[in-house]
Image (cartoon, rainbow, N blue to C red; front, top):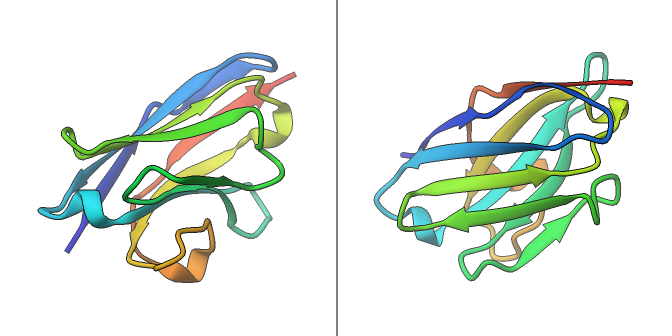
Length: 123
């Protein structure tokens, strides 16, 4: 069983930065594939980043070059550094944990989800 809690959301102007955190309670956190997803109002949930147990990362095209996912296994914490934010990045952001062999930000591969944290980017 894995419990996840996101934090760090808020309001920011376009061009600004935010760092999201996801605290996990799991004895074997370091083994999990971890992902970040987001859902904007009226849209489907979108996978934006993932990081596997060896810190190999993958990104969705919409955030590539602007967002960076990292993990601190000693602290059981996942991070998402978001730079050069745009109004279209406005969404609720979720972290998730899964056991996929190929760790990619594909929703169906994740078993555990946080409650989400909201990010609002104004122009």
